[in-house]
Image (cartoon, rainbow, N blue to C red; front, side, top):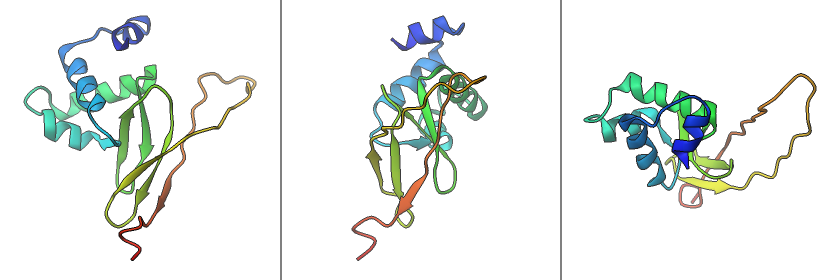
Length: 124
């Protein structure tokens, strides 16, 4: 599936790209590029991780949202949002029901929504 998406966009599924896809599929919450690099650094350098994530976001394989301190990336069949605890970093998924009408002179419209607060454990 991901190989086909990349191929249609003019990219190949390299070993480094495959490693990052495989890693992201195992995550249950969005992770930073630095976190990805720390976990797979034997397979790729940091610049390559950032470039791959940029390509993946461009072709719609991963989604990016702004965390408290850095961008976070996740792989999903459908874009959704996350709420992040400001104190401990706990993350929960929030469905996205936003549907955008066609906007004159624009294609591939994407949006970002940042939600943060205190989780139940931290608010006690």
